[in-house]
Image (cartoon, rainbow, N blue to C red; front, side):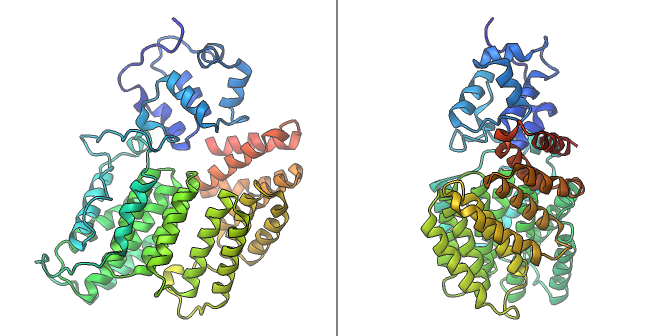
Length: 475
């Protein structure tokens, strides 16, 4: 028989496929498929290549990451041959929605419920309760579809509508000053766990679940509003941890909940920060138009309340979208606005939650986005290196992950300027730190380096660093 054999029930839920789905890598998925323990007979590369209509050598390059599959038509064709369920196709995010897991998959709809405070508290409680019962394996093997396009942007416009008061529905006791102070102390403690992996994420979700239950019973008051702000920070933290782990659908749910909780706390600037984080996720998923609309929604909603520092951050996210779309003039205009706003900021009046957006962060973001723009206009590459080097000079040595991002960005810029050996030296210098960080986003950036260095494969230094990156990513 020509073509793959019938697959047993539960084939796509097997742990052997989890990493491939989490990495959103078709080459890795094909290799995992071939070695799946439920196949009655061994599937060789020759046999698989015949099914896919390619050579064995080409398949080998796909599986080892030397020649990543990034064309949508190829991704779709290979997925169709293998019979990958539509709800698991990370590259077809407008396809059919995944079915609801009867035991709870954490995939509750967070867009359609009302944006009043009670509905928001209930949504947070339901989503966190479901996710707390979801195993790590189940999270990785769940469908990775996220909401995009009008289905994403239009519901988020509710952020601009007036908030209804809480007093009509709340029947429980008021939140006191000591209780609020304890909530803040917990959040400050968890913030230091941001790189703690699954255990830290569960701790954040547990606290968010307890807080949501408390908010459901709290009457309207300044303390209740501030408690919603605490919840917004926890939800954003959960979203960032999910994003780092490659759980994009989970990350999106928590970003939406963070915006809704910020709305309930009447803190529009923090809501705009969460919208900017949602935009960054869209950029990562190749949806710059969606990301730009989210940024512009944040800009419009805070046109009277944003501090100069927040305005600067939002302008850098606007520039990010333009860089990915190759719109050079609009990019430099947005960067100019960001630099003007940043120069006008007063650190004593900036909110604490935007303190990480300092000069080093702004320089790093501008440099990395210039590198993106260099794909459309190679003359931008040298300017990108200048900004990234300034970011490295300004970075606090304790910001290890940020410095690693800078170095990887600088290495990718060196590839763009035709200096592969220098690029490889930079990557080798940070690989020991990457192992200790155990950050999914850092490892995905290293995979981007592997992809971009593929046409230098004949150089020994490039082959060596590609092998070292693969070893780190599978460690």
